[in-house]
Amino acid sequence: MRVLVPSALQSYTGASWVEAEGATLGEVLGDLDRRYPGIRFRMIDERGKARPHVRFFHRKEAVRDLAAALAPGDELLIVQALSGG
Amino acid sequence: MTSKAAARSLILVATRKGAWIYQGDGARRTWRTEGPHFLGHIVSHLVLDPRDGRTLLAAAKTGHLGPTIFRSTDLGHTWKEAARPPAFGPAANGLEARAVDHTFWLTPGHESEHGVWYAGTSPQGLFRSGDGGITWEPASTIHDDPQYRKWMGTVQDGTPDGPKLHSILVDPRDARHLVIGMSGGGVHESHDAGRTFKPLVDGMEVVEGFDPAEVTFHDPHCVRYCPSNPDRLYQQNHCGLYRIDRPATKWVRIGGGIPKEVGDVGFPMVVHPRDADRAWVFPMDASSVWPRTSPDGKPAVYGTRDAGATWQRMDAGLPPSDAWWTVKRQAMTADGDDPVGLYFGTTSGELWMSDDEGGHWREIARHLPEIYAVETAQVG
Image (tube, each protein chain N blue to C red):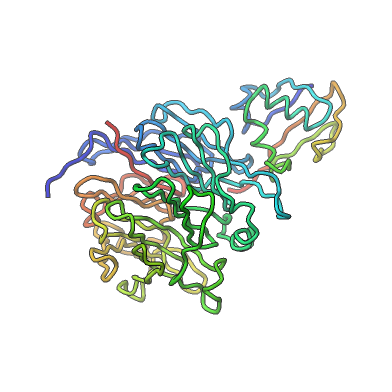
């Protein structure tokens, strides 16, 4: 599926839109990490939790659970919530 | 005293918004700026490996993204991210799982152990790399030790931007002998390369009304050993200045010689590279609500030549008044030259140095972001 990558992570991907495969949020992020090593840990901590200012959207809904199913062919939007000054 | 300087001195400056490297001439008179590196990243520490003179590690994160470590083997011309940054293991012993918020402190390992580095994190964790910072593993049983976890406390108990493990000291005589500081959580010593630790807090005071026997209440801000006598440690603590001469087990408070209106509380602790009786500190206002500014707006370094028995104010060249900054715990350091160069970076983004051991100060840079760490290095 097409994945929108926020500017803070484009040092890994080199592009705002990239492709990744997977049936769940966790699988898609895992595939992204295979393609762009290191990118997953910047978003997901070692407990498997999304970091405080990273959000995922799919079909206009926020997705918080790594096990959540994603509809094939649709887009995953990764968003960085603004924080701090 | 003859003036002898390295071929090239570097000042490594880590800030809240990126890192900068200052390349000096042999005389430490002029400095060429390189940077910013990682603009916008929160860089807690930038350290050069003294064993190879070319490997730089930077502990970084951003406001949005998780923590990582960047590595350069060409003095910062190119950078590559660590393949496996510091991360805690899964929950153990019934304790809550933790996640590294940021790597706060970097220490190259013993001279005999090429490629070994230690990292201290927030929340408190000790990590080790055996391959020059490419991959990192948890280094200590204290992560999953219920007693240590109690002493570490929670985010509620720590410093404003998270509880930290810092001041990772490797004994130059024994690679397995380590000392660490935890804010909060005290000073601890290891004889098995960090696998296990024992508290070293006797003699240290805690905030009034609390029990100094409770390790959790101890808040060392910065601990340093003297390269010329590694049995001697100096400590800047939340509750004053201390020294210990091992094998003694009790810290002695040594800040009484600093005027009461200035006080002996601050963040950094700097030791002389060749004279264990000499050290420098940067006191801050720790009264009432803890403004953490220069006392009365008059910044000054205080130095001792007699292991803390007496202290001399060293403020020539610094603003005489109306300067409301301070210096964080990694943001003051000494080089190895003769005379010793002293360097500090301020919370208001100024970089200062003295090339006469604190006698006179001059500004090298201003208008940087808040400075978190200043290190020096010498390269051929």
